[in-house]
Amino acid sequence: MTAGRRERVRTVVYSLVLLVIFLGAWQALAGAGGKGGKGSGIPGPVAVAQTSWDMLADPFYDRGPNDKGFGLQLGYSLGRLIVGYLAASVVAIMLGVALGSSPALFKAANPFIQILKPVSPLAWMPLFLYTIKNAGQAAVLVIFMSSLWPTMANTAFGVASIRKDYLNVSRLLQLSWPRRFFQVILPAAAPAILAGLRISIGSAWVAIVAAEMLIGGTGVGYFVWNEWNNLALNSVIFAILAIGVVGVLLDFGLGRVAKLVAYTD
Image (tube, rainbow, N blue to C red; front, side):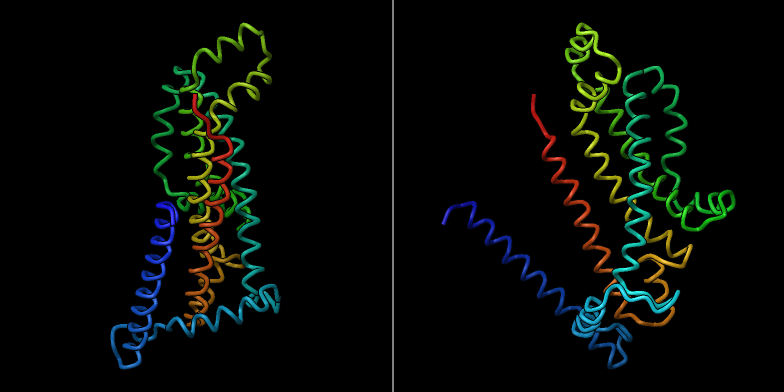
């Protein structure tokens, strides 16, 4: 067995051991609850697994406003995520290219960026609800705000770090601005842009769950809040685990794309 294969086997064994310890501690905490302990009311992994199986068996049912399958709720959240994230990515890349191409413009805009960047995306929610008077669109705008800053900052950094030789050659060849943008700037700054997009998708996924708890109606955030109101903790824990899995898959997908555009000079 090669050293790399032994390392992979060791990693899998460690992961399984950690999983067994986690499930054992969880079951012990749930069992203590049955005797009036601190874990009172927390369902164990077996009960959550049974609930998960039932929910995954029929994920797209629709029995009214407050009773929709988890797959349907997840679809609403992913739809909002895609719209807000894509719109923010386009705007952030364009702004990032402009800021990275002009040091003077970057210095002028930086004070405003530093003030707006730390503001929680959810803090914008009341303003969005007041102005557009649509909860679903307000949630999309929260996604937009949460996705904007990481991508813009990374894009500006990536464009500012492009080797001057590339830009000088493009000027010598008298490339038009669109050709310079698509054939020189974007490819050269692609690793930094993808790093920003990867950070943004994580921020957006965290924000959409919180936003949907506030707006209600549909989405995994609303699902969690609704199940809590029904004291269906099995469903709440299942939703938490599902949200984590979806977040990992989104990050994994962008990580694979980032590897495709990675390069070394």
